[in-house]
Length: 256
Image 1 (cartoon, rainbow, N blue to C red):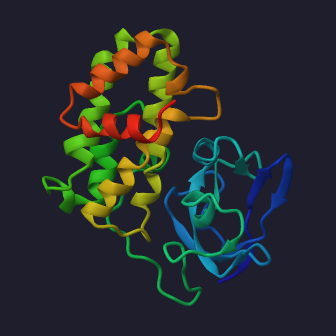
Image 2 (cartoon, one colour; image 1 turned 180 degrees about the horizontal axis):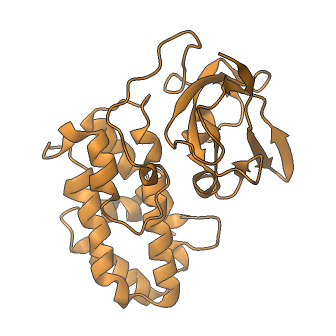
């Protein structure tokens, strides 16, 4: 099959742009049609040591998860490849970690379950993302003792729907940013090459909460900058859930 240079990502690091030279099979990530979630094994010579998976992502997703540090090199593209080491670990160079490694001559990963395109670029507005996307990627975890998607995440998201009116305008912006951050951070977990146990999934997901509360996007929004009234609303929102431990963990590890 004919091979050509991928349209790759600009790395915006300390105001310097780097262009990553990668290769992929033509047509696996169409600039305008994707599909989101399609993967291919790539090599980035001189930047990373080893082959790694790259996933077809929307430009919106790339900008969101990197807080505008990365974007598709061609601004006319809706979709482009985003390499695993950047997507999952935020590493711009070095040795490819085991979770990202692949073989150019190995078989492609098996699709766990077909997911709709919107699952790979969530906007945080739909609490059913956890049920329709994350839970479908890990169906055996539902009702498991380590269930996260339905038992916790969806209900937790819905709690903010109920308390939304109690926030100030700035507080509402923060809630919207946090809910989007929490979902975007979990998108790599539904990729075909990522396989985790229910316990791993729950542990990884919980680790996203504190960073998303403190710095959900590239703006100055942060839990630490909320008014005392909004902080009280956050407290009582979390307090009303059965997962009060997340509040204790947040206060213990990320005190403002």
